[in-house]
Length: 268
Image 1: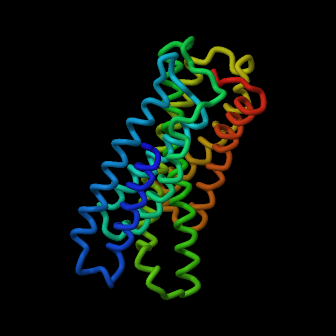
Image 2: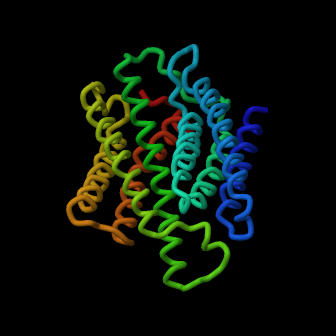
Image 3: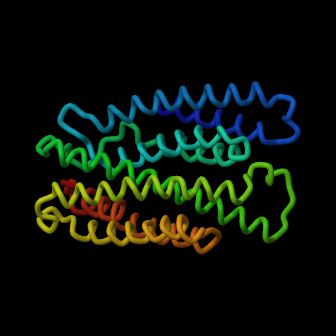
């Protein structure tokens, strides 16, 4: 029941944010925004509670794929709500909240992955940092795709009421690089803590995950540096982000799927 409630709250928030951007609803912007924020906050509170139960089980910290997807959904909703502070980003916020609604499905799902009751607090902290960083960078990938769609629409000169749901491309790119910088910092911390606390990557079937994570970290680092020192923007920067995210998917979701679903092993 809580999953349905969260899904409905996110969808209602998304609809309200989207409507607040349409000219025909300009007379109702204030009540729409109040409703959207209320629905989003309520959904986040329920989602956070369910996520805590999913991840923090009695037998130890759960690192299941279901928990990871739910965490990404929570981050989507949170970043969408924060992004909505900028009026031009409320259309994007609506899209992020809709995706967050989809990601509520794994809440409460049982997974084949074992809880990490036998691991030290350092390893568990490393896992949580990694999950948070990967989730943040997943949100960035969605924003990057949004920027590509926006750029294509601008180049095609398409004029329709849908355009009101898109922020200026420069604003979208600022949001993308903000998420990229935060995600890069989290990923760097996750990699460093992994090297510090994980004793034998090969014995724990994490060598391939580490290699792909390092490649992703390198690409995200180049992107952030290019933005800071050379002012990179546009398709080149977006595609570089998506390449980094592709390696991140191979490192995280690919390896986790193989370990949990095919080999029936847990990460750790």
